[in-house]
Image (cartoon, rainbow, N blue to C red; front, side):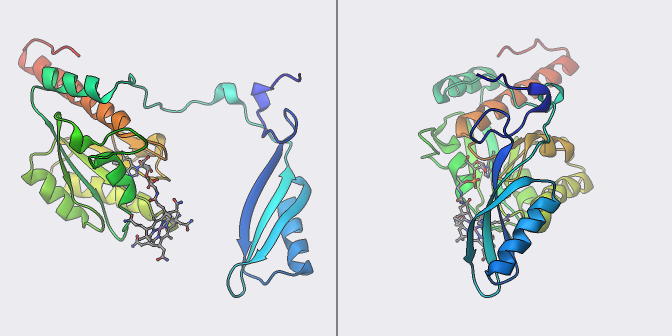
Length: 261
Ligand code: B12
C-alpha cells in the first residue's frame, strides 16, 4: 500500500494521493452543452485536471447546478498546520454536574440567544434544551446550570441587558446564517457592544454555528467557538473549566486558597 505523504496531503478518491475530489457550484445560466463546457473550463482554470461534469441540472429559472469530479496535484503540509484546539477533558453529564456543584458551589448562570436577523433556533436548542442532541442531554437538564434561552432574532443589546439582569456567568451566542459573513458581523457586534458598556471580560463568551470555528471565535475575542457536531456536554465542560479558571484567578488575587477541579 502506498504511504500517505503528510508533507503534501491531498484528497483521496480511488487511490492514496490521487488528488481526486468532488465539488458543486451554481452558475446563473440555463443547463446546455455550452453551460457544461463553461463549467469544465472554469474548473480547469482553477488549476484542476481530469475534469468531469458528473451532474448538471436546472435549479430555478436561469440557474444551473453542477456536480464536478476533478483532480488536483496541490497538497498541504499537514505537519506544519497549527490550530487552536478546544481541548479539555471528555466528561459525562453526571461528572460535570457533580464537579460544578462541588467546585463552583452554585449553578452556573447562562444566557443564550441567536441574534440579529437569524431565525435558526435548532442549533442553540440542541445545546440548551432539556432533550439535548444526539443522546447528549442539554444544559437545562443539569443541576449545575441555570439557563435562559432567549430564542432567535434577539437584538444584541437585549441579550446583553438580559445577561446583566440574570447576573450571567456566560453568554452563548448562536449564528447559523453566514451569507455575506453576517455571522462574523454579529459576533463582532456583541464584543463591541460589551466593550462600549464597560462589560469586557465580565462574561464567558461562547459562540456556535455551522460556520463558526474555534480559531475564528478566539480571533474575534470569544472564549470559544463550537461548530457542527458540538454536543451539550462539550459546551458544559468548557464553561465549567472556564469558571474554575476565573474562580482560581479571583482567589489568587484575594490570596484565598485555590479551588480544585
Ligand atoms: C431548519 C432550517 C431552517 C428553519 C429554521 C427553523 C428553526 N426554528 O431553527 C427555517 C425554515 C425557519 C429556515 C429559514 C431560513 N433559512 Co435555513 N436552514 C435550516 C436547515 C435545513 C437546518 C438547520 C438546522 O437546524 N441544523 C441542525 C442543527 C442541530 O445544526 P446547527 O445549527 O449547525 O447547530 C449545531 C452546531 O452548529 C452548534 N451550534 C449552533 N448554535 C450554537 C450555539 C452555541 C452557543 C454553541 C455552543 C453551539 C452551537 O451546535 C449544534 C449541535 O451540534 C439548514 C440547512 C442545513 N442542513 O444545515 C438551512 C440553512 C441554515 N438555512 C439557510 C437559509 C438561507 C435560510 C433563509 C435565509 C431562507 C430564506 N431565503 O428565507 C431563512 C432565514 C430566516 C432567518 N431570518 O434566519 C441556509 C444558510 C446559508 C448560509 N450560508 O447562510 C442553509 C444552510 C440552507 C442552505 N443550504 O441554503 N431555515
